[in-house]
Length: 99
Image 1 (cartoon, helix red, strand yellow):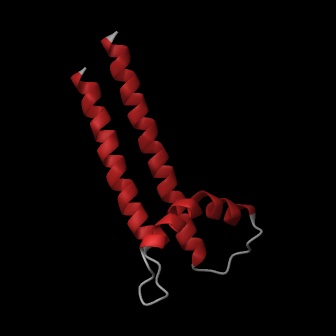
Image 2 (cartoon, one colour):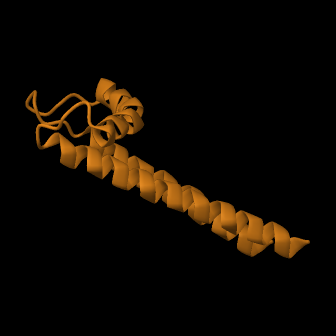
């Protein structure tokens, strides 16, 4: 029974790590698309904005643009996501190995 619990926790850690990696690429895609003038009706552009705007909009409330134009909120969000992901995933792996 301990093996099942350990494998379950490891699987959860793997899924969380995968979700964090996918969301990281989505944020990077949003940043790259912001460098050009995208068609706001394009489904990919709409998806990128809908998937990232809740978190980036929240970060923008607390992180003003540098010089009034340079938005660093995606960088801060990416660092926080990676930090929290590492913390959660590594903790789950250690928990699984201790079972």
